[in-house]
Image 1 (tube, rainbow, N blue to C red):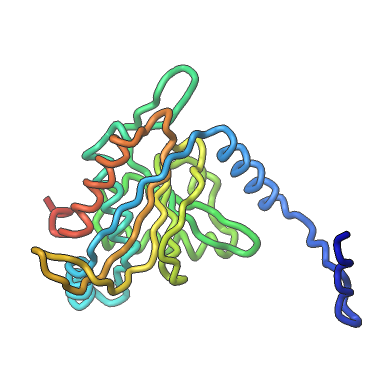
Image 2 (image 1 turned 180 degrees about the vertical axis):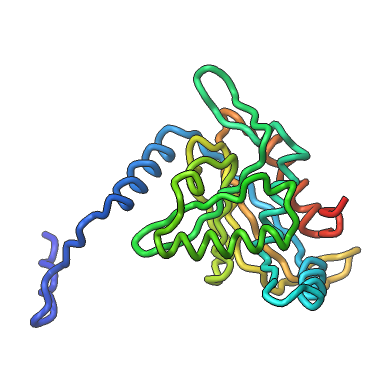
Length: 240
C-alpha cells in the first residue's frame, strides 16, 4: 500500500488554488491545440558568436546616445534575412494549400505577469539593427504594461523565443499557430570547439527550430538554419 502523504507544515494550507486569468486560459488552449494538432520536428544547430559579439561591441561604441544593440536584435534580423533567402520556410499550413508569405514578420516572445505575449517586428528583413532595437524596446515595455494594440501582437510569420538571459542552454518551443516554425535560442557560452583539427575556445549559442512537418520538413528547416547560422557567424553579410 502507498504510504500516506506527509501532512502540510503547521499553519499552511495543503495547496492554494490560483484563479485562471483569461490570458492563461487562451495560452493553455492554443498551446494544447498546437502540440496535439501540429506534427512538430526539432532541428538543433550551434552558432559561434565571437564575431557577432565583436561587431556588436563596436557598433554600440559608435551608436548615438540611447542606442544599445542586444544579441536578440541581431537574431531577429538574421532570422528575417534567412527566411527571405529560404522563402519556402516562410509559410503556414491551411487545408486549402500552403500559404507562402511575402512579408517577414518576426513575433518575439516576451514574458509578462502571469503570461506570455508575442509582439511583432513587421518587415524585419528590411529594417536596420538600430530600428529593430528601438522597436523591440518599445514593444516589450508596452507589453509589460498592457498597452499593446491587438494588431501589434496578433499575426507574424515566424516566432522567436530566447531564454539565453536565464542561462538556459537548450530547449524546444511549441509552435505558435498558424505559423509553421519557432526558433528557441539558448545562452551564449564559452565552449571547447575543434578548428582545423585543433582544440580551441569559442562563444557558442545553441538554437533549436521547431517546425510544422506538414509545411517545413527536415531539409527545408535545415536550409533555413544554415542561412541563419551564416548571418550570425558573419554578421557583415546582413549588410549585403
